[in-house]
Structures are given as structure tokens and as C-alpha cells.
Length: 236
Image (cartoon, rainbow, N blue to C red; front, side, top):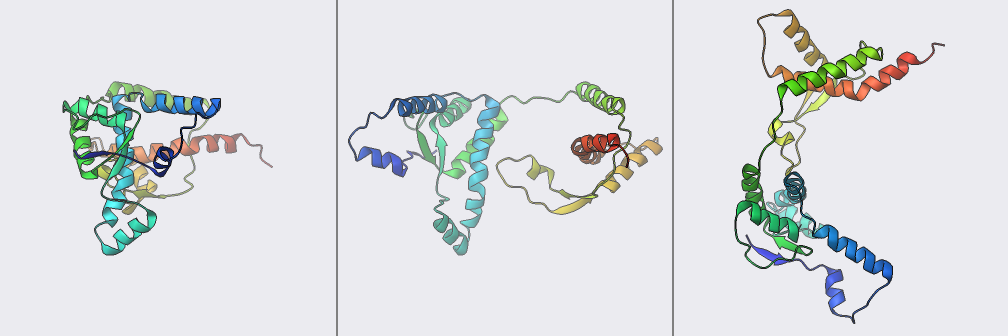
């Protein structure tokens, strides 16, 4: 991985002037900033931190493939040649992969790295880190509890205020390093019909129906409270 220390304008200006001890408030803020910068990430937050960085550079890399795109990048002051990342994240990255650092890094400093190298390291680290699992009995029990709560508060049905919703490819939806593209429209009524078909046909079962169910649960989660409020309002 190609790594070089990142120098922003404020850092360069500080090297050209006499040292300024600053006020007490400045020293406190600086100390707190240094402390936060050197804090180690948990594996989940570390991956999230790197993914956010890659998400930011992804449209810049796309634009760099065309002449006009490169002009836009220059106009915005953005570069597809490097991505800036915290020293602590880089240190942890190499520790996870069991690779030696190419140079001595300071945890509180920032460094410029080749985005393609960071993408490669991110993919490799993601495969190494332990993955959590979803227990079906937990999901079933939680779902039953939530639906029982709706019944307790008197919500037996929820008006369908809108039908269409955006759909994206699953691989894009779960890849935090790239912006997903909204490719088509789905219909909640179609998904609800699929649930009714599932109940009526004893021989019909498919795990993909969880996808249709998920869109309906998302709608319920965003609209159940409004339904309850409207139900409890006195009629004029």
C-alpha cells in the first residue's frame, strides 16, 4: 500500500510561524482531538469508518474515467489519486491483515493512500473479521412481540397511503462503499398480495417472500404510530 502523510493548509501554515502556546481552551480542544484520533475502533466501527471513506471516493473515481469528469474533480478540488484516512485506522488495518506497516505511522495523524489499495485491503479484512449471525428463533420471538403490541394498542390494520417504492439491487444495498442506484419501482400492494397467496396456498413456500414481507414491515414501522393517532382522534 502506498502511504504518504497528509498535509493540509493549516498544518503547513503552522510550520511557517512561531509556536503559539494558545489559550487553555485551545489546548483542551487539541488534547481531546488527539485523544479521539488515537482511539482504537471496534471491528464493526473500523469497517464502517473505512467504508464511509470509500463511499466518498467512489463517485470521484467514476468521474475520473472521462475528460469532463476529471474537469469536475479538479473544479471541486477532489483527487482520484489518493484518499485521506486516519493513522489509527491504517494501523488497525495492517494488524488485522497481519502485514507490516510500510512506514512508521502516528495514530493521531492522517495519511493519503491509493484508493484502489484501500479497497483491496477493505475486502480482505472484511473476509477475515468474524461475522455475526441472525438467529431465527430470536427474529420469530421479536416479531410476535411486536405484532402483539400492535394488537394491544388497537391497531388491527394500517391504511396504505402510498403504493410505489424504490427498489435497488441487494448487492448494492449492502455495500456501504458505493452509492446504490434506484433502478425500478415496486408496489406494496403486490407484496401484500404475495403474503395472501402464501397463506392460501398450503404448498407454496419460498424464502424470497421475506423480501416482500420486509417492505411491508418497513411501511408498518413508519406508519403504525400515525394510524394510532388518527384512530384515537375524536370524530367531528
